[in-house]
Image (tube, rainbow, N blue to C red; front, side, top):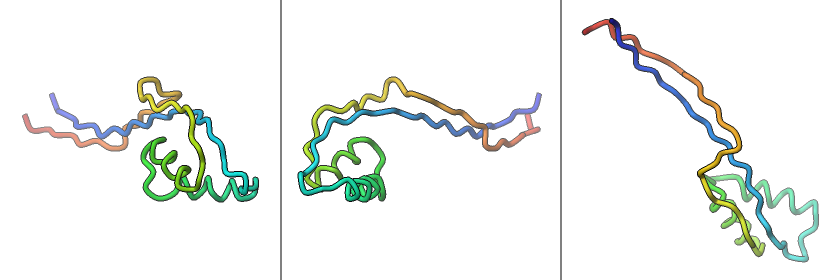
Length: 86
């Protein structure tokens, strides 16, 4: 029986809520620019995002950083290799 190696990508999505206070001098049009900056670059987790917000003067309260229960997931088989050798 031929063997097959499957290459699978699994993507998990987490929905987070972050309680934060922003500096008083920041206006709403500045907020979008700051949020774009905070999520750009090397941001691999909500902790990285929160760190970037703190650098801009935000006071961060409670946020969930638990990875146990994703809000959504997707699995896709990207490629495969068939090996007919036994």
